[in-house]
Image 1 (cartoon, rainbow, N blue to C red):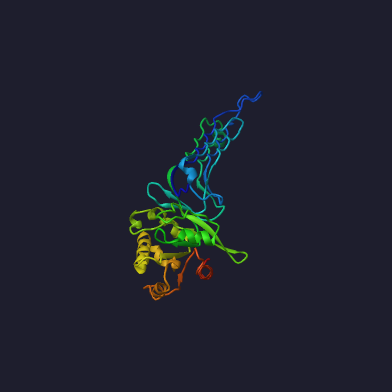
Image 2: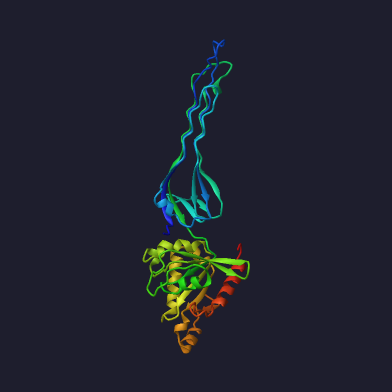
Length: 332
């Protein structure tokens, strides 16, 4: 099961209180203060784990509380520090304040480790406060409280190429052909109910990652269909591949609707480079295909690919172009 949104409660530990004690030794009738400091409270730490690809664990485990620090002891003994609580999340997880939805962390690199809520400091024992003028202080400091928050965890898949298209546009078929991913494929809408990642091997030692985003429909940016649930995953991709079913009579309109939904969801999408492909050309006559090849898309001057993933038509040329385009992008 793929889960990409979760709400959790986190709390760091309270610092231990300092101790108020005095030395009680033979031949030392007026022993001085010997109260030790309290231990520090445990912290809340986020760690990215490359072996995780879903937030499923947080469906059942929603509370993460670090241990409190122990109280100080006599003979100047410091209390034990509280144990940290380590929260492992997939790479690409965004941490937000549940109340304000402010982004607090963007955990977008492997093996990141971030101390999110530091535990409270332990209080000083009475030995700390001894001075020449006050040699027997009878007070100690309380430990500092920890911090608590309600958080929203949001997973955004990190991929090089995101496949965008209406249901049954052939996205799942393409990703199954060019990678080892095995998404569900059928001739009815919304067969893909969760994003699929596929690693496309290019030459001997090169590869890039493709994400099959579940079908977007008109109105997806307002919550219709499945689109709104998965549009967030498109934000991470470096390059978009729009896939339009060539058997549809309104190819230009189909592309314009998809483009509009992305721009409505986020204005940042206007800056994201994209490639266009017409799919299922094996189902067309030669005359119809020739007519389709005459189509021009306003605002797009790049190549249009004509694909049949089942028959293998145009797939290699597309992969070559995607690789070249990805390598031409800044910071790839």
